[in-house]
Amino acid sequence: MASRQDQIAEILDRFAENAGNDVAGVAAVSMDGIVLVSRMSADVNADRVGAVAATMIGVTRRVSGELKIGFPDEAIIKAANGLFMVLPAGDQSLLAVNLREGANLGMVRLEARDAVKSISQVL
Amino acid sequence: MTATLRPELGDFMSLICFQYLRQVAEETAGRALIITAGRQRGQDLAEQLGLLGTTQEAAVLREKLDQALGGDGTRLCLVQSVTPKEDGGYEIRVAEGACAAGVTSSEPFCAFTMGVFMGAISAMTGQRMLGKESECCATGASTCVYQIDPVG
Image 1 (tube, rainbow over the protein chains, first blue to last red):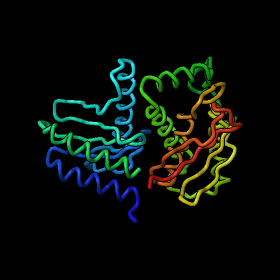
Image 2 (cartoon, chains in turn red, brown; image 1 turned 90 degrees about the vertical axis):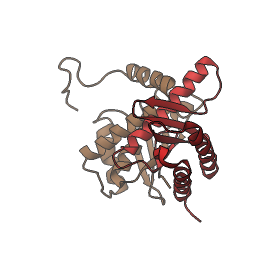
Image 3 (cartoon, chains in turn brown, purple; image 1 turned 30 degrees about the vertical axis):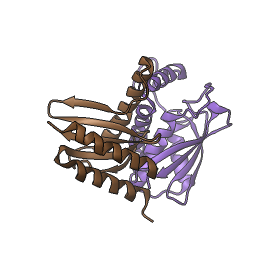
Image 4 (spheres, rainbow over the protein chains, first blue to last red; image 1 turned 135 degrees about the vertical axis):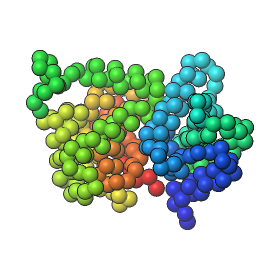
């Protein structure tokens, strides 16, 4: 039987393939910020991105809690040259996605939702 | 430890200030931020102790970590035991940890202290490590116990 890491790697590869060229990199990260599997490009420090992604979810949850607007489905940073999206994948992990400028967010969201569901089933 | 950074006050400050910084940062931004800080400290410590990429006897590792973090070191905690596990991880038992000192909580509370051991062991073994606190003084245990296991 494939290890959990292998299963998650397969999910990330499928996500990247289905979402197409909009995805510059993707990683599965524990809620504590530990990278479980990374498909980020070589010039990205995946460990640091994982820690930031987990902190983004932490901050987002607190903001949502303070505003009483429910549990966050995702957090997105839109920057000049790309986007960064983080989605909780169950209670224990999250999906961090680095997107190219002009990415089709609707399409990526659909694929990302499938990916987080699959990851949460593995963990 | 010799005071080197502040001529008058020395290198130590009260747990009260540490715990305000740590607890309010966690309440505001979540636990990952605190664990990340601990991991960074642990990685740097492993490098300073010459542990990078080495295999250490558990007793030697305990002694080195206790010397660096215990009463003769930065006084983060007393490292009571380091026990290797079959999966390549370690069980770490500490007493008088700075995170949980004087704290009562329904959940384990040692995000920074545990992060230090996650970072140190990760740097030593070259593997990413997950951490789980199986016992915590803040929840009424006599010592704090961290399960540090490789991602797998």
